[in-house]
Length: 107
Length: 177
Image (cartoon, rainbow over all chains, first blue to last red; front, side):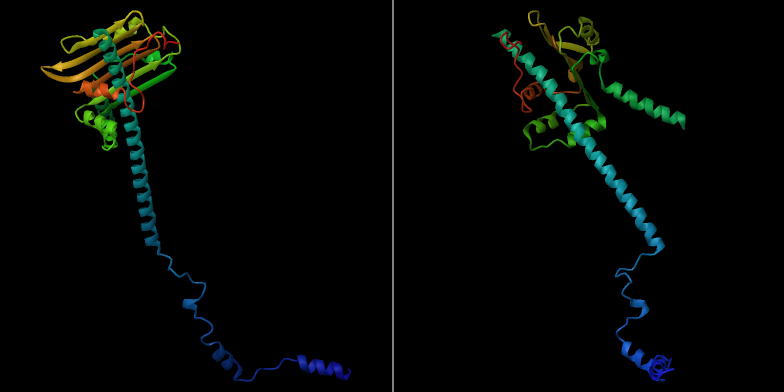
């Protein structure tokens, strides 16, 4: 074994850190690393509880039903209005046609 | 439960039949027609339609005013590509229901030359008008209207030339194709 091998062996040999090393590292990291409760991966808004989620789902379903019902009612109203106007247009048109004929005859 | 459902359906059906004051029986013409209009509006649907009419629009405002007192409006209008699609029997089928004492014909017009017929009937209860029937037939068109309830015929006639279309004028020989 030559001197180079010996140097390498001594450089790579496991050495125990000094007793104050762990404390020093902890002190250095203190204030840099967040604690577990406010970790960076935690959501800004807390995820609602299971009960709250159920209420939210129920509210969304009711909102959807009410909205759908109102939409259908609106569609029905527009269609009814279209039919009313069409019916009066036809009835008025026939009546107007008849009146024009009668005016011609009377003249 | 089934009985209640059946009674509800029967009540709904009778309400529709009750509002319409005579039967049209013209379904067979629909197969021959190139254009068909079938309007049956009564009760809540009619009132719903009325709520959607714009009071600021002159035509819609007039219709809204007329709807206020009526129970229903029923229209069957057929247009045909060729003449002879409807028969005198179709006309008579409707006309035969419009008899006194319920119905009174207030005006009738017939042109043998043009093959046109138009009649207007009023349904009267005492001195109160409770319905109008319009029967109009042209060689290529057939129309039956029933308005259940009182209606101002002058105002209705004025609507004939509105809705963005010119007032209907009788065909002259030059206009015929």
